[in-house]
Length: 542
Image 1 (tube, rainbow, N blue to C red):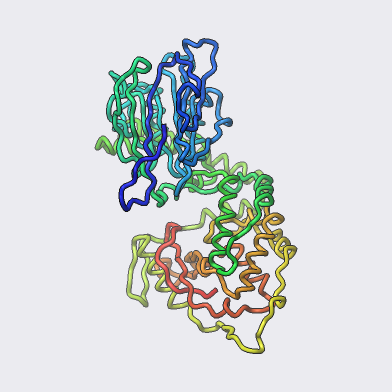
Image 2 (cartoon, rainbow, N blue to C red):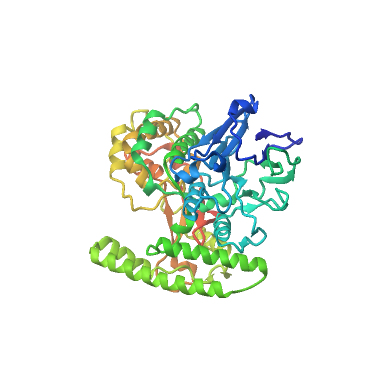
Protein backbone atom coordinates (compact mmCIF):
# COMPACT_ATOMS: atom_id res chain seq x y z
CA UNK A 1 0.00 0.00 0.00
CA UNK A 2 1.32 3.41 -1.01
CA UNK A 3 0.00 6.58 0.59
CA UNK A 4 1.19 10.10 1.28
CA UNK A 5 2.90 10.83 4.60
CA UNK A 6 2.87 14.07 6.57
CA UNK A 7 5.44 16.71 5.72
CA UNK A 8 7.68 18.47 8.20
CA UNK A 9 7.61 22.25 8.33
CA UNK A 10 9.90 23.73 5.71
CA UNK A 11 10.28 20.37 3.93
CA UNK A 12 9.91 20.72 0.14
CA UNK A 13 10.19 16.99 -0.51
CA UNK A 14 7.36 14.54 -1.22
CA UNK A 15 6.91 11.90 1.49
CA UNK A 16 5.29 8.48 1.05
CA UNK A 17 4.43 5.66 3.44
CA UNK A 18 4.84 2.28 1.77
CA UNK A 19 3.58 -0.87 3.51
CA UNK A 20 4.28 -4.41 2.33
CA UNK A 21 2.86 -7.69 3.61
CA UNK A 22 2.82 -11.27 2.39
CA UNK A 23 -0.43 -13.27 2.45
CA UNK A 24 -1.35 -16.91 2.28
CA UNK A 25 -0.85 -18.14 -1.28
CA UNK A 26 -4.08 -20.18 -1.31
CA UNK A 27 -6.30 -17.12 -0.87
CA UNK A 28 -8.23 -16.02 -3.95
CA UNK A 29 -9.37 -12.49 -3.18
CA UNK A 30 -11.04 -10.14 -5.61
CA UNK A 31 -9.98 -6.50 -5.63
CA UNK A 32 -13.47 -5.39 -4.54
CA UNK A 33 -13.25 -7.65 -1.48
CA UNK A 34 -10.26 -5.73 -0.16
CA UNK A 35 -12.54 -2.78 0.73
CA UNK A 36 -10.07 -0.16 -0.49
CA UNK A 37 -12.29 2.33 -2.35
CA UNK A 38 -9.73 5.14 -2.00
CA UNK A 39 -6.96 3.14 -3.67
CA UNK A 40 -6.10 2.18 -7.24
CA UNK A 41 -5.39 -1.55 -7.36
CA UNK A 42 -2.62 -2.93 -9.59
CA UNK A 43 -2.23 -6.69 -9.38
CA UNK A 44 -0.68 -9.66 -11.11
CA UNK A 45 -2.05 -13.14 -10.41
CA UNK A 46 -0.32 -16.34 -11.36
CA UNK A 47 -2.62 -18.63 -13.33
CA UNK A 48 -1.71 -22.32 -12.89
CA UNK A 49 -3.40 -25.65 -13.11
CA UNK A 50 -3.09 -26.21 -9.37
CA UNK A 51 -4.54 -23.63 -6.99
CA UNK A 52 -2.70 -25.23 -4.06
CA UNK A 53 0.69 -24.52 -5.66
CA UNK A 54 -0.28 -21.21 -7.24
CA UNK A 55 2.27 -19.27 -5.13
CA UNK A 56 0.18 -16.16 -5.69
CA UNK A 57 1.34 -13.01 -7.44
CA UNK A 58 1.68 -9.36 -6.46
CA UNK A 59 -0.69 -6.51 -5.67
CA UNK A 60 -0.03 -2.78 -5.33
CA UNK A 61 -2.58 -0.38 -3.82
CA UNK A 62 -1.89 3.30 -4.54
CA UNK A 63 -3.84 6.08 -2.82
CA UNK A 64 -5.96 7.87 -5.43
CA UNK A 65 -4.62 11.24 -4.29
CA UNK A 66 -1.20 10.18 -5.63
CA UNK A 67 -0.69 10.62 -9.35
CA UNK A 68 0.65 7.34 -10.70
CA UNK A 69 0.72 5.07 -13.71
CA UNK A 70 1.44 1.39 -14.26
CA UNK A 71 4.51 0.43 -16.29
CA UNK A 72 3.86 -2.43 -18.72
CA UNK A 73 5.88 -5.63 -18.20
CA UNK A 74 4.51 -7.40 -21.29
CA UNK A 75 7.96 -7.63 -22.89
CA UNK A 76 9.30 -9.78 -20.03
CA UNK A 77 9.16 -13.61 -19.91
CA UNK A 78 5.87 -15.20 -18.81
CA UNK A 79 7.46 -16.48 -15.59
CA UNK A 80 8.05 -12.84 -14.56
CA UNK A 81 4.94 -11.09 -15.87
CA UNK A 82 2.58 -12.38 -13.15
CA UNK A 83 5.23 -11.99 -10.43
CA UNK A 84 6.11 -8.35 -11.04
CA UNK A 85 4.27 -5.05 -11.03
CA UNK A 86 5.94 -1.66 -11.57
CA UNK A 87 4.29 1.62 -10.58
CA UNK A 88 5.53 5.10 -11.49
CA UNK A 89 4.71 7.81 -8.96
CA UNK A 90 4.65 11.20 -10.66
CA UNK A 91 5.94 14.06 -8.51
CA UNK A 92 8.88 16.46 -8.56
CA UNK A 93 10.85 13.64 -10.17
CA UNK A 94 9.57 10.21 -11.29
CA UNK A 95 9.82 7.53 -8.61
CA UNK A 96 9.41 3.86 -9.50
CA UNK A 97 8.20 1.16 -7.12
CA UNK A 98 8.58 -2.43 -8.32
CA UNK A 99 7.06 -5.34 -6.41
CA UNK A 100 8.37 -8.86 -7.08
CA UNK A 101 7.39 -12.27 -5.79
CA UNK A 102 9.79 -15.18 -6.31
CA UNK A 103 8.42 -18.61 -5.24
CA UNK A 104 10.48 -20.62 -2.75
CA UNK A 105 13.17 -23.16 -3.63
CA UNK A 106 11.70 -26.40 -4.94
CA UNK A 107 8.78 -24.73 -6.66
CA UNK A 108 8.51 -25.26 -10.40
CA UNK A 109 7.47 -21.60 -10.66
CA UNK A 110 10.69 -20.24 -9.15
CA UNK A 111 12.10 -17.66 -11.57
CA UNK A 112 15.23 -18.77 -13.45
CA UNK A 113 18.46 -16.77 -13.37
CA UNK A 114 18.15 -16.06 -17.11
CA UNK A 115 14.67 -14.58 -16.65
CA UNK A 116 15.83 -12.57 -13.63
CA UNK A 117 18.67 -11.13 -15.70
CA UNK A 118 16.12 -9.94 -18.26
CA UNK A 119 13.98 -8.54 -15.44
CA UNK A 120 16.83 -6.56 -13.88
CA UNK A 121 17.95 -5.30 -17.30
CA UNK A 122 14.38 -4.11 -17.89
CA UNK A 123 14.36 -2.28 -14.54
CA UNK A 124 17.74 -0.68 -15.28
CA UNK A 125 16.54 0.67 -18.62
CA UNK A 126 13.01 1.66 -17.56
CA UNK A 127 13.49 2.87 -13.98
CA UNK A 128 16.99 4.33 -14.25
CA UNK A 129 16.70 7.27 -11.85
CA UNK A 130 14.88 6.33 -8.65
CA UNK A 131 13.89 2.72 -8.08
CA UNK A 132 12.57 0.95 -5.01
CA UNK A 133 12.40 -2.82 -5.50
CA UNK A 134 10.59 -4.83 -2.83
CA UNK A 135 8.78 -8.09 -2.26
CA UNK A 136 9.20 -11.68 -1.12
CA UNK A 137 12.42 -12.90 -2.76
CA UNK A 138 12.62 -16.16 -0.73
CA UNK A 139 16.39 -15.86 -0.19
CA UNK A 140 16.83 -16.96 3.45
CA UNK A 141 20.51 -17.96 3.12
CA UNK A 142 21.87 -14.62 1.89
CA UNK A 143 24.08 -12.36 4.01
CA UNK A 144 23.05 -8.89 2.84
CA UNK A 145 25.96 -7.13 4.54
CA UNK A 146 28.33 -8.80 2.05
CA UNK A 147 25.83 -9.88 -0.66
CA UNK A 148 27.07 -13.46 -0.28
CA UNK A 149 25.21 -16.74 0.01
CA UNK A 150 26.13 -20.40 0.37
CA UNK A 151 23.31 -21.12 -2.08
CA UNK A 152 24.53 -20.68 -5.68
CA UNK A 153 21.12 -19.49 -6.95
CA UNK A 154 20.81 -16.85 -4.23
CA UNK A 155 24.45 -15.81 -4.70
CA UNK A 156 23.87 -15.08 -8.40
CA UNK A 157 20.79 -12.96 -7.61
CA UNK A 158 22.69 -11.06 -4.91
CA UNK A 159 25.49 -10.32 -7.39
CA UNK A 160 22.98 -9.02 -9.96
CA UNK A 161 21.38 -6.73 -7.37
CA UNK A 162 24.81 -5.53 -6.25
CA UNK A 163 25.76 -4.69 -9.85
CA UNK A 164 22.57 -2.59 -10.12
CA UNK A 165 23.74 -0.54 -7.12
CA UNK A 166 20.67 -1.62 -5.14
CA UNK A 167 21.14 -1.42 -1.38
CA UNK A 168 19.13 -3.78 0.84
CA UNK A 169 17.50 -2.04 3.86
CA UNK A 170 15.80 -4.86 5.82
CA UNK A 171 18.08 -6.00 8.66
CA UNK A 172 15.51 -7.96 10.69
CA UNK A 173 13.47 -11.14 10.24
CA UNK A 174 10.28 -10.66 8.25
CA UNK A 175 9.00 -14.10 9.30
CA UNK A 176 9.52 -15.97 12.54
CA UNK A 177 12.77 -17.55 11.37
CA UNK A 178 14.28 -15.59 8.48
CA UNK A 179 14.35 -12.48 6.29
CA UNK A 180 12.38 -13.19 3.12
CA UNK A 181 10.88 -9.76 2.32
CA UNK A 182 13.43 -7.31 0.93
CA UNK A 183 13.50 -3.56 0.29
CA UNK A 184 16.17 -2.44 -2.19
CA UNK A 185 16.81 1.07 -3.51
CA UNK A 186 19.39 2.67 -5.82
CA UNK A 187 19.40 6.04 -4.04
CA UNK A 188 20.40 6.18 -0.39
CA UNK A 189 18.64 9.46 0.40
CA UNK A 190 15.18 8.10 -0.46
CA UNK A 191 14.68 5.57 2.37
CA UNK A 192 14.17 7.24 5.76
CA UNK A 193 13.49 4.08 7.79
CA UNK A 194 12.01 0.57 7.66
CA UNK A 195 10.08 -0.85 10.63
CA UNK A 196 7.75 -3.69 11.56
CA UNK A 197 4.24 -2.30 11.91
CA UNK A 198 2.17 -5.20 13.22
CA UNK A 199 1.96 -8.86 14.19
CA UNK A 200 1.41 -12.11 12.35
CA UNK A 201 -2.15 -13.00 11.39
CA UNK A 202 -4.00 -16.12 10.39
CA UNK A 203 -3.78 -14.95 6.78
CA UNK A 204 0.02 -14.59 6.67
CA UNK A 205 3.24 -15.82 8.24
CA UNK A 206 4.98 -12.54 7.25
CA UNK A 207 5.20 -9.46 9.44
CA UNK A 208 3.90 -6.24 7.85
CA UNK A 209 6.67 -3.72 7.10
CA UNK A 210 6.44 0.06 6.73
CA UNK A 211 8.94 2.01 4.64
CA UNK A 212 9.01 5.81 4.95
CA UNK A 213 10.17 7.41 1.72
CA UNK A 214 11.21 11.00 1.00
CA UNK A 215 11.66 12.30 -2.56
CA UNK A 216 13.67 15.47 -3.12
CA UNK A 217 13.69 17.48 -6.33
CA UNK A 218 17.40 16.89 -6.87
CA UNK A 219 18.24 13.96 -9.13
CA UNK A 220 20.77 11.46 -7.86
CA UNK A 221 24.25 11.59 -9.35
CA UNK A 222 23.80 7.93 -10.28
CA UNK A 223 21.50 9.04 -13.08
CA UNK A 224 24.53 10.49 -14.87
CA UNK A 225 25.68 6.91 -15.52
CA UNK A 226 22.81 6.53 -18.03
CA UNK A 227 22.49 7.85 -21.53
CA UNK A 228 19.99 7.81 -24.37
CA UNK A 229 20.80 5.17 -27.00
CA UNK A 230 19.69 7.05 -30.12
CA UNK A 231 20.98 4.27 -32.40
CA UNK A 232 18.26 1.98 -31.00
CA UNK A 233 15.53 4.60 -31.24
CA UNK A 234 12.25 3.89 -33.02
CA UNK A 235 12.39 7.00 -35.22
CA UNK A 236 9.11 6.21 -36.97
CA UNK A 237 7.29 6.27 -33.63
CA UNK A 238 9.20 9.40 -32.58
CA UNK A 239 8.23 11.20 -35.80
CA UNK A 240 4.59 10.28 -35.25
CA UNK A 241 4.78 11.55 -31.66
CA UNK A 242 6.31 14.88 -32.78
CA UNK A 243 3.53 15.38 -35.32
CA UNK A 244 0.81 14.34 -32.84
CA UNK A 245 2.24 16.58 -30.08
CA UNK A 246 3.41 19.79 -31.83
CA UNK A 247 5.49 22.41 -30.05
CA UNK A 248 3.07 24.91 -28.49
CA UNK A 249 4.93 27.20 -26.06
CA UNK A 250 3.00 29.47 -23.73
CA UNK A 251 5.67 32.20 -23.88
CA UNK A 252 6.97 34.07 -26.96
CA UNK A 253 8.12 37.29 -25.31
CA UNK A 254 11.20 35.82 -23.59
CA UNK A 255 13.70 34.02 -25.85
CA UNK A 256 15.27 32.06 -22.98
CA UNK A 257 11.93 30.76 -21.71
CA UNK A 258 10.88 29.92 -25.26
CA UNK A 259 14.09 27.96 -25.85
CA UNK A 260 13.81 26.10 -22.54
CA UNK A 261 10.24 25.14 -23.38
CA UNK A 262 11.45 23.70 -26.68
CA UNK A 263 14.03 21.55 -24.86
CA UNK A 264 11.41 20.37 -22.35
CA UNK A 265 9.10 19.45 -25.21
CA UNK A 266 11.66 17.48 -27.23
CA UNK A 267 13.22 15.71 -24.23
CA UNK A 268 9.79 14.61 -23.01
CA UNK A 269 9.29 12.84 -26.35
CA UNK A 270 12.85 11.50 -26.33
CA UNK A 271 12.36 9.92 -22.90
CA UNK A 272 9.38 7.98 -24.24
CA UNK A 273 10.81 6.72 -27.53
CA UNK A 274 14.60 6.52 -27.01
CA UNK A 275 15.85 3.62 -24.85
CA UNK A 276 18.16 4.31 -21.93
CA UNK A 277 21.44 2.43 -21.53
CA UNK A 278 24.23 2.38 -18.96
CA UNK A 279 27.44 4.18 -19.81
CA UNK A 280 29.47 1.11 -18.85
CA UNK A 281 29.01 -0.49 -22.28
CA UNK A 282 29.57 2.81 -24.08
CA UNK A 283 32.97 3.29 -22.43
CA UNK A 284 34.25 -0.18 -23.35
CA UNK A 285 36.38 -0.79 -26.47
CA UNK A 286 34.30 -1.58 -29.60
CA UNK A 287 35.52 -5.18 -29.75
CA UNK A 288 34.26 -6.07 -26.25
CA UNK A 289 31.58 -8.77 -26.42
CA UNK A 290 28.62 -9.13 -24.06
CA UNK A 291 30.25 -12.14 -22.41
CA UNK A 292 33.45 -10.20 -21.71
CA UNK A 293 31.47 -7.23 -20.36
CA UNK A 294 29.65 -9.61 -18.03
CA UNK A 295 33.01 -10.96 -16.80
CA UNK A 296 34.18 -7.39 -16.13
CA UNK A 297 31.10 -6.76 -14.02
CA UNK A 298 31.79 -9.97 -12.10
CA UNK A 299 35.32 -8.74 -11.33
CA UNK A 300 33.98 -5.38 -10.09
CA UNK A 301 31.44 -7.16 -7.90
CA UNK A 302 34.07 -9.47 -6.46
CA UNK A 303 36.40 -6.55 -5.68
CA UNK A 304 33.62 -4.66 -3.88
CA UNK A 305 32.80 -7.74 -1.83
CA UNK A 306 36.47 -8.16 -0.88
CA UNK A 307 36.68 -4.50 0.14
CA UNK A 308 33.74 -4.97 2.50
CA UNK A 309 35.53 -7.95 4.05
CA UNK A 310 38.83 -6.01 4.26
CA UNK A 311 40.63 -8.29 1.78
CA UNK A 312 42.66 -7.39 -1.30
CA UNK A 313 42.42 -10.47 -3.48
CA UNK A 314 41.13 -14.02 -3.68
CA UNK A 315 41.50 -17.10 -5.84
CA UNK A 316 38.13 -16.38 -7.42
CA UNK A 317 39.22 -12.85 -8.38
CA UNK A 318 42.48 -14.12 -9.89
CA UNK A 319 40.62 -16.73 -11.92
CA UNK A 320 38.05 -14.21 -13.16
CA UNK A 321 40.80 -11.76 -14.14
CA UNK A 322 42.71 -14.40 -16.13
CA UNK A 323 39.53 -15.49 -17.92
CA UNK A 324 38.60 -11.88 -18.70
CA UNK A 325 42.06 -11.07 -20.11
CA UNK A 326 41.87 -14.06 -22.44
CA UNK A 327 38.35 -13.14 -23.54
CA UNK A 328 39.49 -9.58 -24.36
CA UNK A 329 42.33 -10.92 -26.52
CA UNK A 330 39.97 -13.27 -28.38
CA UNK A 331 37.38 -10.49 -28.85
CA UNK A 332 39.94 -8.11 -30.30
CA UNK A 333 41.33 -10.69 -32.73
CA UNK A 334 37.82 -11.56 -33.94
CA UNK A 335 36.85 -7.88 -34.24
CA UNK A 336 39.94 -7.00 -36.29
CA UNK A 337 39.45 -10.00 -38.59
CA UNK A 338 35.85 -8.96 -39.35
CA UNK A 339 36.81 -5.28 -39.72
CA UNK A 340 39.63 -5.83 -42.23
CA UNK A 341 37.64 -8.47 -44.10
CA UNK A 342 34.87 -5.89 -44.64
CA UNK A 343 37.34 -3.61 -46.53
CA UNK A 344 35.38 -0.59 -45.28
CA UNK A 345 37.99 2.18 -45.52
CA UNK A 346 36.17 4.64 -43.26
CA UNK A 347 35.81 2.20 -40.37
CA UNK A 348 39.34 0.84 -40.79
CA UNK A 349 40.92 4.33 -40.75
CA UNK A 350 38.79 5.30 -37.76
CA UNK A 351 39.92 2.21 -35.87
CA UNK A 352 43.61 2.74 -36.71
CA UNK A 353 43.32 6.39 -35.67
CA UNK A 354 41.77 5.42 -32.35
CA UNK A 355 44.79 3.20 -31.61
CA UNK A 356 47.10 6.22 -31.87
CA UNK A 357 44.86 8.43 -29.78
CA UNK A 358 46.47 9.19 -26.41
CA UNK A 359 44.94 10.81 -23.36
CA UNK A 360 46.50 13.78 -21.62
CA UNK A 361 49.81 13.08 -19.84
CA UNK A 362 49.72 12.62 -16.04
CA UNK A 363 51.12 16.12 -15.49
CA UNK A 364 50.74 19.19 -17.69
CA UNK A 365 52.38 22.59 -17.24
CA UNK A 366 52.37 26.16 -18.46
CA UNK A 367 55.68 27.99 -18.83
CA UNK A 368 53.93 31.35 -19.16
CA UNK A 369 51.67 30.89 -16.14
CA UNK A 370 54.36 29.03 -14.13
CA UNK A 371 51.89 26.37 -13.05
CA UNK A 372 51.55 22.58 -13.12
CA UNK A 373 48.45 20.39 -12.93
CA UNK A 374 48.01 16.70 -12.12
CA UNK A 375 44.34 16.18 -11.25
CA UNK A 376 41.50 16.45 -13.78
CA UNK A 377 40.15 19.63 -12.17
CA UNK A 378 43.58 21.27 -12.07
CA UNK A 379 44.18 20.40 -15.73
CA UNK A 380 40.80 21.81 -16.73
CA UNK A 381 41.46 25.07 -14.86
CA UNK A 382 44.93 25.37 -16.41
CA UNK A 383 43.53 24.91 -19.92
CA UNK A 384 40.80 27.43 -19.13
CA UNK A 385 43.29 30.04 -18.00
CA UNK A 386 45.51 29.48 -21.03
CA UNK A 387 42.68 29.52 -23.60
CA UNK A 388 41.34 32.72 -22.02
CA UNK A 389 44.68 34.44 -22.75
CA UNK A 390 44.96 33.33 -26.40
CA UNK A 391 41.33 33.90 -27.47
CA UNK A 392 40.95 37.67 -27.61
CA UNK A 393 38.70 40.24 -29.20
CA UNK A 394 41.25 40.95 -31.95
CA UNK A 395 39.98 40.06 -35.39
CA UNK A 396 36.30 40.12 -34.47
CA UNK A 397 34.06 42.66 -36.12
CA UNK A 398 31.09 43.48 -33.96
CA UNK A 399 27.93 44.90 -35.39
CA UNK A 400 26.70 48.08 -33.78
CA UNK A 401 23.13 49.27 -34.38
CA UNK A 402 22.79 52.15 -36.80
CA UNK A 403 20.21 53.61 -39.15
CA UNK A 404 21.69 51.98 -42.26
CA UNK A 405 21.38 48.54 -40.66
CA UNK A 406 17.78 48.73 -39.58
CA UNK A 407 16.61 45.24 -40.59
CA UNK A 408 12.96 44.42 -40.98
CA UNK A 409 11.22 41.16 -40.17
CA UNK A 410 11.45 39.89 -43.76
CA UNK A 411 15.14 40.69 -44.33
CA UNK A 412 16.14 37.24 -43.05
CA UNK A 413 14.01 34.43 -44.42
CA UNK A 414 13.70 31.28 -42.32
CA UNK A 415 11.49 28.71 -44.00
CA UNK A 416 10.52 25.17 -43.10
CA UNK A 417 11.92 23.89 -46.40
CA UNK A 418 15.28 25.57 -45.71
CA UNK A 419 15.50 23.87 -42.32
CA UNK A 420 14.51 20.47 -43.77
CA UNK A 421 17.19 20.80 -46.46
CA UNK A 422 19.87 21.67 -43.93
CA UNK A 423 18.88 18.83 -41.57
CA UNK A 424 18.96 16.28 -44.42
CA UNK A 425 22.55 17.25 -45.21
CA UNK A 426 23.80 16.76 -41.63
CA UNK A 427 26.79 14.50 -41.08
CA UNK A 428 25.64 12.03 -38.41
CA UNK A 429 29.24 11.13 -37.49
CA UNK A 430 29.84 14.60 -36.03
CA UNK A 431 29.91 15.08 -32.26
CA UNK A 432 26.86 16.26 -30.38
CA UNK A 433 26.83 19.57 -28.57
CA UNK A 434 26.12 20.64 -25.01
CA UNK A 435 22.47 19.61 -25.22
CA UNK A 436 23.59 15.98 -25.94
CA UNK A 437 21.14 15.65 -28.88
CA UNK A 438 23.05 14.00 -31.77
CA UNK A 439 22.80 15.04 -35.45
CA UNK A 440 21.25 11.59 -36.09
CA UNK A 441 18.00 12.63 -34.40
CA UNK A 442 17.73 15.87 -36.38
CA UNK A 443 18.44 14.09 -39.66
CA UNK A 444 15.98 11.22 -39.07
CA UNK A 445 13.29 13.54 -37.68
CA UNK A 446 13.97 16.53 -39.94
CA UNK A 447 10.55 16.45 -41.58
CA UNK A 448 8.60 16.47 -38.33
CA UNK A 449 10.84 18.67 -36.20
CA UNK A 450 11.43 21.41 -38.80
CA UNK A 451 8.26 23.34 -37.94
CA UNK A 452 9.17 23.61 -34.25
CA UNK A 453 12.68 24.81 -35.14
CA UNK A 454 11.23 27.35 -37.56
CA UNK A 455 9.01 28.76 -34.80
CA UNK A 456 11.97 28.86 -32.44
CA UNK A 457 14.29 30.59 -34.94
CA UNK A 458 11.66 33.08 -36.07
CA UNK A 459 11.03 34.06 -32.46
CA UNK A 460 14.77 34.61 -31.96
CA UNK A 461 14.84 36.74 -35.10
CA UNK A 462 11.78 38.72 -34.02
CA UNK A 463 13.16 39.46 -30.53
CA UNK A 464 16.70 40.00 -31.87
CA UNK A 465 18.18 38.11 -28.94
CA UNK A 466 20.33 35.00 -28.76
CA UNK A 467 19.26 32.34 -26.17
CA UNK A 468 21.48 32.24 -23.09
CA UNK A 469 21.61 28.43 -23.30
CA UNK A 470 23.31 28.74 -26.69
CA UNK A 471 25.98 31.16 -25.48
CA UNK A 472 27.92 28.31 -23.91
CA UNK A 473 29.41 25.10 -25.23
CA UNK A 474 31.84 22.29 -24.51
CA UNK A 475 35.47 23.07 -25.29
CA UNK A 476 37.99 20.25 -25.62
CA UNK A 477 41.80 20.69 -25.73
CA UNK A 478 43.17 19.34 -29.04
CA UNK A 479 46.88 18.51 -29.21
CA UNK A 480 48.72 20.02 -32.19
CA UNK A 481 52.50 19.47 -31.92
CA UNK A 482 55.47 19.78 -29.59
CA UNK A 483 55.68 18.73 -25.95
CA UNK A 484 52.38 17.17 -24.82
CA UNK A 485 52.96 18.42 -21.28
CA UNK A 486 52.89 22.07 -22.39
CA UNK A 487 49.41 23.62 -22.59
CA UNK A 488 50.53 26.08 -25.29
CA UNK A 489 50.69 23.15 -27.69
CA UNK A 490 46.92 22.61 -27.46
CA UNK A 491 44.08 24.42 -29.23
CA UNK A 492 40.45 24.69 -28.10
CA UNK A 493 37.76 22.85 -30.08
CA UNK A 494 34.16 23.89 -29.51
CA UNK A 495 31.38 21.28 -29.73
CA UNK A 496 28.33 23.16 -31.05
CA UNK A 497 24.65 22.19 -30.81
CA UNK A 498 22.98 21.46 -34.15
CA UNK A 499 20.39 24.23 -33.72
CA UNK A 500 23.04 26.79 -32.79
CA UNK A 501 25.22 25.82 -35.73
CA UNK A 502 22.29 26.10 -38.13
CA UNK A 503 21.27 29.46 -36.72
CA UNK A 504 24.76 30.93 -37.03
CA UNK A 505 25.77 29.50 -40.41
CA UNK A 506 22.62 29.03 -42.48
CA UNK A 507 19.63 31.03 -41.36
CA UNK A 508 21.53 34.26 -40.67
CA UNK A 509 24.33 34.09 -43.22
CA UNK A 510 22.65 36.78 -45.31
CA UNK A 511 22.62 39.46 -42.57
CA UNK A 512 23.83 39.88 -38.98
CA UNK A 513 21.57 40.39 -35.99
CA UNK A 514 22.23 43.26 -33.65
CA UNK A 515 21.82 41.34 -30.43
CA UNK A 516 23.66 38.26 -31.69
CA UNK A 517 26.83 40.18 -32.45
CA UNK A 518 26.71 42.52 -29.48
CA UNK A 519 26.67 39.86 -26.76
CA UNK A 520 29.33 39.93 -24.09
CA UNK A 521 31.87 37.19 -23.52
CA UNK A 522 30.26 33.81 -23.03
CA UNK A 523 31.07 31.45 -20.24
CA UNK A 524 32.49 28.42 -22.06
CA UNK A 525 32.86 25.22 -19.99
CA UNK A 526 36.13 23.53 -20.77
CA UNK A 527 36.62 19.78 -21.01
CA UNK A 528 38.79 18.09 -18.41
CA UNK A 529 41.04 15.16 -19.26
CA UNK A 530 38.32 12.62 -18.61
CA UNK A 531 35.74 14.36 -20.80
CA UNK A 532 33.69 16.07 -18.12
CA UNK A 533 33.03 19.77 -17.80
CA UNK A 534 34.88 21.81 -15.22
CA UNK A 535 35.35 25.46 -14.38
CA UNK A 536 34.35 28.15 -16.86
CA UNK A 537 36.34 30.84 -18.62
CA UNK A 538 35.51 33.50 -21.20
CA UNK A 539 36.49 32.03 -24.58
CA UNK A 540 34.27 32.85 -27.53
CA UNK A 541 31.47 35.14 -28.52
CA UNK A 542 28.18 33.87 -29.91
